[in-house]
Amino acid sequence: MHDGERYGEWRGGFARMSEGVLIDAPIRLNEHELQAHWFAGDFGRNFLTRDGVRVQIVQFGTWNHEAGPDFAEASVSFDGAPPVKGCIELDTDWRDWERHGHATNEDYESVILHLFTQRGTLDFFTRTLQHRNVPQVLLDVTALTHRAPEFLPEAKLGRCVGPLRALPEEKVREILLGSAHFRLQRKAASLALLTELHGSDEALYQGLAAALGYKSNKLAFTLISQRLPLRLALRAKAETDALLFGLSGFLNAADLGEYDATARIYLRRLWEQWWPRRAQYERLTIGPGIWKMSGQRPANHPQRRLGALAQIIRHWPKMRALKEECDPAAVRRFFHELRDEYWDHHFTLTSKAGNARMALVGESRLTEILANVLFPLAVSANPERWSDYQKLPAALSNRRVEIAATRLFGESVRRHELLRSVAMQQGLLQIYEDFCMQDSSDCQRCRFPEQLARW
Image (cartoon, rainbow, N blue to C red; front, side, top):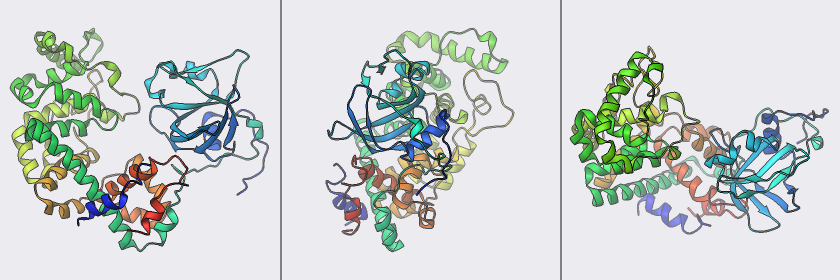
């Protein structure tokens, strides 16, 4: 039995399922101080909403450092009912919900509790974009008796920290590699289905597009690769990028006079190539509501990633050969040498040119392509490539990996040693998604700690 099969069987059905420094606390705290007090539990975990409903915070969730609500993956019980999972938003003033545009922002549709410390004399209802009423809790800052902690972890330590600490390192590695193998098999099966439905080239093309979309824009890039199939993109040749940007909805008519000379030339070419095809593709154009622009590093802007996808299409025979070989060194050389006259020096379609050249696909995204597209395809064709996958070094870890590592390992030295490879990080994410993200009991009913003894 492979480790992945063993993890899948072991995982079973369980995956579904000190005093501070005393000082006078200021009445007015900034939002970051309030968030720190909240996450540390200084306000308590039992409240009444403004309309008298009993609220118990079962899980405080995790810090959200991206666009959207302040805390994600929280779990809240209302009037003793089973916990509801969602996000929590904390504002200093009750009016900030409207002032900051949360009511018209779909990112806040997942909010299940709105907290604030100041309210006016008028009644105010917290409504989402879909007109759902969000329960409100007024926090009492006068109850605080100490400073907000200067450092808080990304997430609360899980109940599994103790059992994992007691296991020998080789056993922990075995568990992580088993879950990584299981995760790789699932990705391989998904790509195999795409291959069966659309052919090997289209499966690779759609997989690469989704990987370039990152977490925030994976759906948008997937839709573009579906609506502009590879065979049509290859046939377009020099007009490929115009079709990609046109379908994305990024080619809106605008006064080009406000942009620099390079941007004007590039945009004019795209628009002139897109205009004759606009009526043909207009029904398939991606709406602006699908794109997530906030919280992105400039170099990761989706418009730059579309530019990268256009260049990948232009070099498709080489990309196809790289898939067959799946040699990480060769893949890195290909992407490091990938060039685009415009996107080497621009963040967006309308930004000013920078002097330094920027890679179209950075090292972390390249690692994601290897882990989520090329190696799943390679292992599906030849299971012995699993040993090569285990050797793939990890790039910088992302926020989800850090949260998962905190939940399972705390700040132990073992955590940093174990997460130096892609396989270990992927295994950690699989466990986090199977157990931590499915749990609404603040670890109390999670079966992972008990499962560890049965591995």
